Image (tube, rainbow, N blue to C red; front, side, top):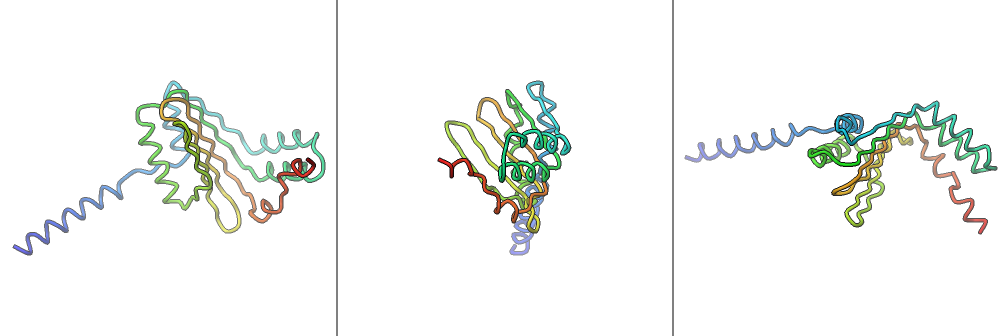
Length: 172
């Protein structure tokens, strides 16, 4: 009797663990591809050379440290992919849960999470050594619009810490 009970417990444990491990995770790009199939979605991919060119143009009117910061940051962005959705598909929450599971599996850190009046904003980053390689911003509400920004980067944490982002505030 003990052997039968033990074998049932082991079998149920194995079946339960298979369901958890078989749960699908979605990378940010796969998530965007799935949601993009919906008629209420639009996505744009911006290559790194466009970001760098835009950074150079934007820095023309800047001076000193601000110019250097914009150039360094734009130089560090390899690619940006943006998805905007005006009405989430039915499976959106399941796909979002699979995306968050992917973040956990791939060692992303959640840097920011804000919840306000049904809106949810979270910023995730994947860090390898002393560089930030991926940044993902997820904005969604329970009923309405949603957006996701996926950036491939090569931003050095040491350079990021040395940048003075609030130069204008010091002048006040």
